[in-house]
Amino acid sequence: MKFRAWGAACVFAAWAVVASVGVSEAQAPDMPAEVDTALIVSVDVSNSVDEHRYRLQMEGIAKALEDPEVLKAILSGPQGGILIAMVTWADKPRLSLPWQRIANAADAAAVAAKVRALPQQTGEFTCVSGMLRSISDKVVPQIPAKALRIIVDVSGDGRENCNPEQQPAAVRDELAASGVTVNGLPILEGDEGPALEQWYRENVMGGPGSFILPADGFGDFGRAIRQKFMIEISGGFPPRKEARANR
Image (cartoon, rainbow, N blue to C red; front, side, top):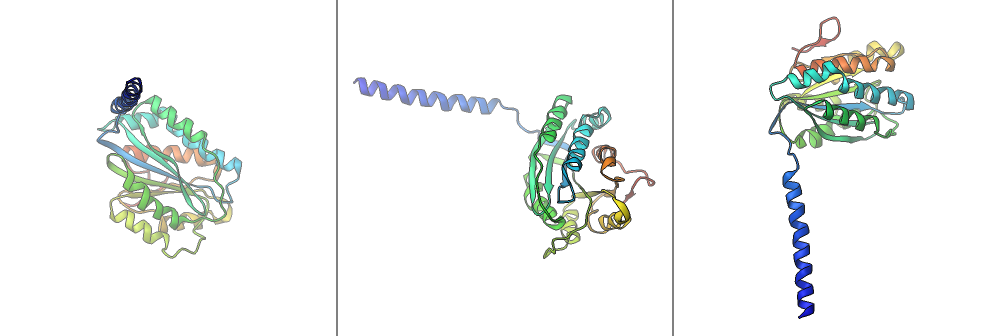
């Protein structure tokens, strides 16, 4: 009898734990049914990106998310919030920051802190096609809410050099055909700058309202990504003198 009583008590205790977990999960805030923008920030971290350049990019993204004007744009949409994810890529892409919701200043600060804490990913090559394929197949399908706009924001300082089976423009065209906007932020360094901007225009930019907004070197990345976020989140177009839009 004592053994039976002890067994019943254990079963009851286990049931209580399961029930408490169920209650906790039920009380956890769910993702919204709809957001204004689902933004995928895709950052090149190949071998040309040393620790200093990596930190310039992460700090630039974090500061942009904390910027009062960017936050105002986030909160001014009809749904009052966005979803954001981050992919870092070189030889292979990595979902460094899974989908996060930003609907207030505290959310923005929390996401900015996560961005600053991301460890540097290493890699030799600049595999643009593989990055776009991963985003198309694995990241976009996992958006946890209906988004009025889906935007992929690609930044980097080099062209495709992985000899892929499928060229970046072909994958970009698939994303564009599904209604995803792919914008480019080429980081222009030295004499190769103008050629890289043109390459991004031909192979990266695509979809509704897409545009290219270059940074004048890594030191200018913070300015460029802030301006880019403002345009992307507000659903507007960049001034012609700043970037060439695809209308």
